[in-house]
Image 1 (cartoon, rainbow, N blue to C red):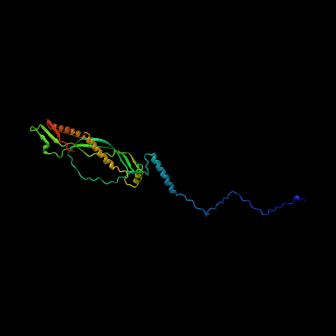
Image 2 (cartoon, helix red, strand yellow):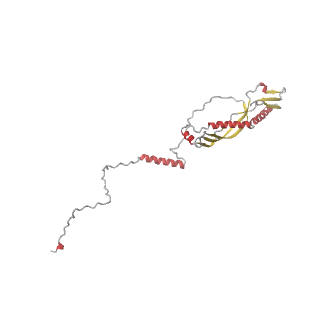
Image 3 (cartoon, rainbow, N blue to C red):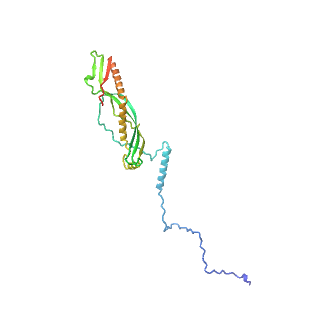
Length: 252
């Protein structure tokens, strides 16, 4: 029999080493098995995602403004002030003859000695609008204030001079135009309940408004209008000669 026809026997190689694959082998976990040694990953709860979706929808609805759709996150203002308290009633016996409307610009600056204005100090530009009334007081008239002729055809009235009322600054028409504050003042304002009080500005505007009224012809206009009112009223009562005089102003 030929040697090539004999069956071949495989001879194992000595010290055979299995080849190691460089690709990682992924092992499938069996159902119900628990992985040990690995840190569990945190997953957000479902309600947190739903809350975020609702917040986004609320912002979109508020920006778009769909009519007829109520915004569940809308804000509202509630007035919890107590009712007004009536302190006193005062009877007036005066005639308001004229009113002056004024506009005042207050430029107030507060400096700190030896410190730059960038660090400390404040400058405020305040625009104030208000009114001052001119009136004649009738309450203190004596018996000699009205003199009539024997035939009741002529009458002479002697009245006190016109008086100016306290200025009234309108907060709806007044505002701060600009305000410049130093760095230290800004930092201190964080801890203050009322860092930018406008009370001093209003007081300054009232005083300057009163000074402007004193220099105007508001008193003269008030006396002129009061005289015209009394002449027309007494003429209607049958007097043919009506004279209205004002006492000299003894103010300094």
